[in-house]
Amino acid sequence: MLYYWLRLFPELAFYVTMISETLVDISHFFLMFLMCVAMFANAVYVLNQMEPANKVDAPNEPIYFKAFNVPFIDSFFYQYLLGLGDFHMDNYTAHPANVLIYIYFILATLFTQIMFLNMLIAIMGETFGRVTEAKDRSALMERTHLYADFLWGITLTKELQGKRYLYVVRPAHHEEEDQNSVILSV
Image 1 (cartoon, one colour):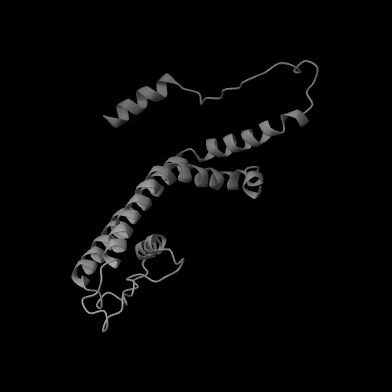
Image 2 (cartoon, one colour; image 1 turned 90 degrees about the horizontal axis):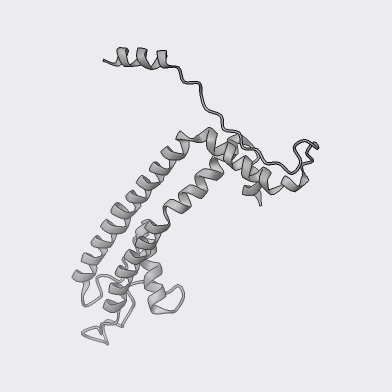
C-alpha cells in the first residue's frame, strides 16, 4: 500500500514507475538466470553423488553446505550464493573429482557473476534511461491511475456529469523554428 500511495507525489511516482518497469524488464532475464544456476547446481549435485576412492580416509562430505537437508535444493542454494560471491570451497580438495569441480567453479563464476549479473545491470540501465526520458509523463500517468481509482469520490458539476473528456496537450510547433534549425544544422 505504501508504494500505491507514493504515486501521489510526483517526485516519488517516478521511482514507483522505475521499480515496476524494472521488474517487468527483468522477468525473462530472471528465468534464464534461474536456469543457469540450476544447470550448475545439477552438475554439482551429480558430482556430489560420486563415491570417494577410499571410504575410510575420506568420508562422503558434500561439496556444498547443508542448508535445507535436501541435496538438490542445497546444491541450488549453494550455486545461487556462488553467483552472489560466496566462495565456500572447503570440501573441494577432498573430492575425488576435484579438478572437475574447480572447472565448474570457474565456469559458474564466469557465467553467473560476470555475464548474467552484468547483463542485469545493463537491462536495469536501459530501463532507467527509458523511464528517466519520460519522467514527467510517467509521474503524471501514475497520479492519473491513482486518481482513477478514486473517481467515484469526485463530484462533478451538472454540465460535466455523465460526460467524459480527454485532453491532449502538445507543444506548439512553428514552421519558422524548423527551418532555422535545419539551416543551423547544415
